[in-house]
Image 1 (cartoon, rainbow, N blue to C red):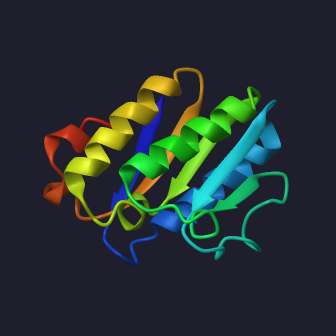
Image 2: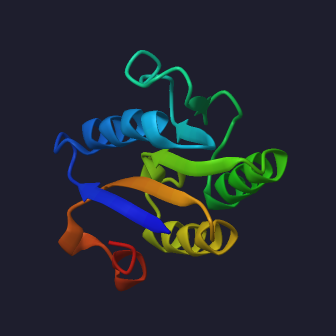
Length: 133
């Protein structure tokens, strides 16, 4: 199941995600993975969640993001929650590429809860992304 947290910069998306991650660490029976651009969440989330820095792996663009997510999932079958913070920054603010990568990730995460932050006003999103709201 994929869920988007949408809002303009400074609207509290990351704070909401941090609360969701920390709550998930208390209730999950599996592993939690958090992908973000830069390591700004290091001290905010519970240490049991695996934090991955997209910059550390040179992740740029939708194709690389999909490959990275697929590789993480292939390497660990116990992942129950996946959080991606700031997807638009990872895909160079390309809405079409974002829609395609969300569809692709959704297909390979049937039994995983996926939460993604999108820095944009909800009314500015194309229908291909709004369907995950």
